[in-house]
Amino acid sequence: MSAPLERIYDEHAQSLFAFLLNFTRSEADTRDVLQDVFRKLAERPDLLRDAHEMRPFLLRLAHNQAVDLMRRRTTREKNYTGLAKETPDLFMPVPDADEECLRNALTGALDELPPEQRAVAHLKLWEGATFETIGATLGIPPNTAASRYRYAIDKLRQRLRPIYEEIR
Image (cartoon, rainbow, N blue to C red; front, side, top):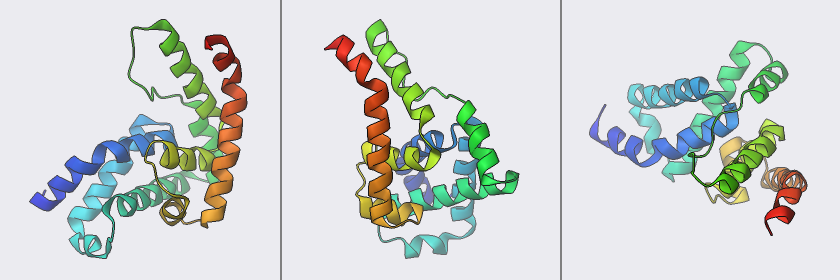
């Protein structure tokens, strides 16, 4: 791996992994897609010249690779159903039972979101991306990204409200 590519990997692989894991819901698929992204960059370093901002560029590339993976398997709907059944550990384990309960509830609530809403919520909440950046990353209009985010937050709020009331 070239020095610039190693630097890019060191700076962005962790956030790409988190995004992909949240999107695919499969650690094995996440690792495969992440490897494909960096293999593609190693084979075609000219792709990096077109990147105005590195993180959004890499997130879009990773998202496209993940979608391509799902399409290759059969149909998008069949894959979303299969991927939604897997529940990866999104958070590090903690010794506090209450915090562990909250994390489990959040993971369960995220599992219930459609993949499109889950991807937007991840980019907004964990990456701090704007709707314009999310739209560019996922290939959708910014207003669609905002709508998906609003629907995701409404669903998460509804699902997590009992836990919030309990710990308040």
